[in-house]
Length: 161
Image (cartoon, rainbow, N blue to C red):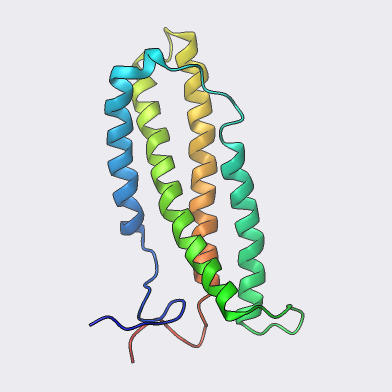
């Protein structure tokens, strides 16, 4: 039986590290296998690649502070509609899951390039971009988790009563 619930309620559970490990591992393995066969056909990676992830992480860090303040009824916070808070929670959950997959792809790329790092110049360049993508994705995972948890009422511990 499924019951509807608000953010953090019975209808939606908090994202756990185990939830993030599944897309991370699956996409890391998939990216590694695909890159084993097609890396030489790809153009060099650009340093601009991690910028959208980092920008979204920054936006979600700011939004998580605003949502947390509204949920906790901070006197200085501007009020937010419950639907907006629920959407922010869903955005945070989705961002955390997707960016875990992106981090997995970056790890798959790095593992693929590891044997060629000191012999192929392009491998060193692409590995550096891959590390930046991984860092940006990790920041987005953290920001997404913070945004998701910001919408949870501190008086509600998330357990069914």
